[in-house]
Amino acid sequence: FDEYSICNICGTLRTIYSCDETQYNAGYFEVCLKYLLTDINTPLNLSRLGMISRWLKGHAKVLDIGCNTGEFIRFAEQHYDCYGVEINEKAAEFAKSRLVRSPVYLSLNGSIPRVDAVTLFDVIEHLEDPLKLLRQIHDDYLHIGGVLMVTTPNISKVTHPTKVKSWKHYKPREHLFC
Image (cartoon, rainbow, N blue to C red):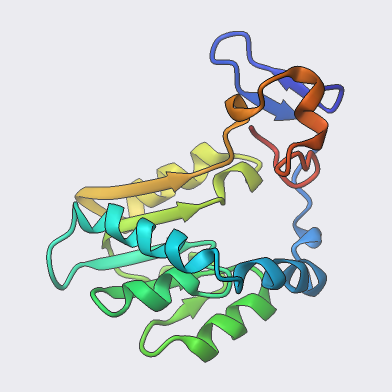
């Protein structure tokens, strides 16, 4: 735990490092691509679509922030109007090449209309200031009564402190929060 500090109020772990966006370069995308295109992701993304669909009506608009290869949007765009945001240029280009009708942007640049749902799948732990993004989503992108779906690694699944460093999500320079 020497690379994290623990909040005494909520128990959240915060890394001692700051966000370094340069790590999310082409090399990062190549590593992610090997995992993201495996068979495990089809049921995962269908499950995510099923969960969010419980809250949406037909013709809803969905914004997937941190869409990477566009795998979730690939399924969601069959039912909804989708938009993706991905800061990694290679991942964004890859996503654009496989999506049928959903635009992918490199940032939240104001081109995206208000939506009925925003997804942050395994994104929030990478952010220096997650609250800033959540406020921006609330103020600029999400309709009143809209749905925000967030997934993030769960440190409480680690059964003993000595096993933290062998946990697959132990990446203190990448995962700023656990």
